[in-house]
Image (cartoon, rainbow, N blue to C red; front, side, top):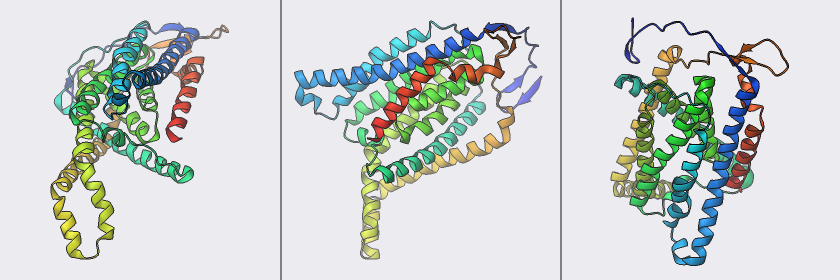
Length: 356
């Protein structure tokens, strides 16, 4: 029995049972089906959203022009139609549900801080990429705050802060990891983060969503409790909504005006007028970057203890070759299939749309 800061006392694991054999066709088929299903998610989301939007324009044009209508033609059909379809379809795959385990408060806090590190790093990468795209194309890229900024704050909190985290954690974490963790925890967590990031469909969000997806996926496979990923996801989304609605509309214009201030007195007047918003923005930045800094320290100290169990499986080829450990063929089987090819093609299409 050993003590670890990640979760108290742990018992030495019992020897793994003898490895079973699976065929290449089964593994490739599972990842291919996953690719097709999440391609369907992207297409259904676009198709249903545009369909409901055009229907609203026909029967209620005034409502369709309202900024709040985006929740009713985009978000609501996604939660009521797309999410249940994909969730139930993923349940058709052989399920390997992570066992519910004790996940101590200290371990949870460390995991969330590491998630903040991944989010901040991903945001930096996303900002660089979007800046390069804007410089090359001359077209400004739309940020999620641009969409939220014109909507009702209570509707935004409901749809973005509450419903979105629940729906996304169910289909990108629970359904996907339950369906793929049979082939290794690492493969399932990586697939969860990758699909989650790419499904956002734009460069400004995909990198930090990928990082958060990895952190949330780790929490889920090690705890077996999906509410432990829903809670930080909802907190981040709610904070994003509140910042977009209450703080950024006051801080961003101030940043643009400060270089034009003719005298120190005018600069002081501008800053004093927006002092509460600046204080909130400073507090948010301090907490986020402080958590990310702690996450960096924790990651450096504990990264050797961050373990994701590989599948105790051997894979047999269709050509009659001797079985080999699945980990040696996993990348080729996970990406070398029709479903993965179609999914990446759909992702490229959505990213091109976001740029244009």
